[in-house]
Length: 280
Image 1 (cartoon, rainbow, N blue to C red):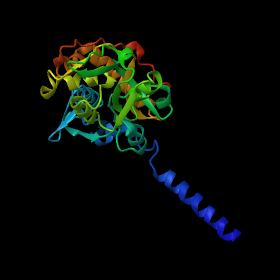
Image 2: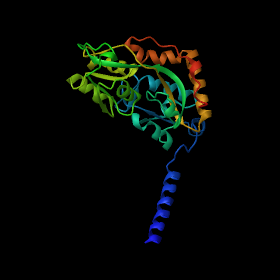
Image 3: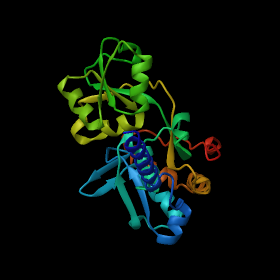
Image 4: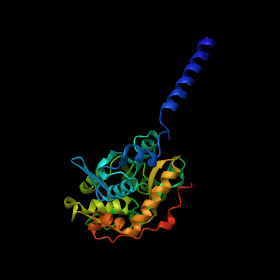
């Protein structure tokens, strides 16, 4: 019996080692090498975030999409050769580490916990957590959330903040923001909470005009980064160079004006002095 058990332990250990070795964790080429060798890039985006990244009939549009095109062009890849990959908020680290994507542009807040898993270029935008409510709502800010039902995306920093800082609310979580919007319209929830630009994108949709309003009282800072393999410091630094060039040559402003700027919000200044995360 002892021999059989010991043998089983050896087999399990061997299988565990093999699985870890084949899992692709942070293996494969960095973004510079991948772009130079194949002239293609795989970019992870959220497919259902109007204004940032929205997939319609196989075509992706939004600010994150335009930033992805700017980065690809700076790496020598024609935007037509980008492979856009649908991802979800909880899976962003996983798709990077497995090599499913070369980098992720997906309302991806840079924080210390995530920096242990992936490396971040940017930030290319600093968002703030806000609230989207029905047009007739009396909610004016997070101080009015006591006893309310708030919907947010599972795995997001927004959901964690609502749970920890506003414990007298009831948190409804889904894996897709769009499900929160349906609940808001039906009255099943009182507010949707995530980053202001995400909510701005939803409020801009023709079918939502007049139904919802953005409270406009942010209660966090969410620096959006471009997530890539932890080992890829050179790729991170190169992408930061591309973003700094975009801030100077007007392409960053053009990306904003073509997407979120249509909602009436002026292009925010891109503070390149904050692009210090590559060395982390």
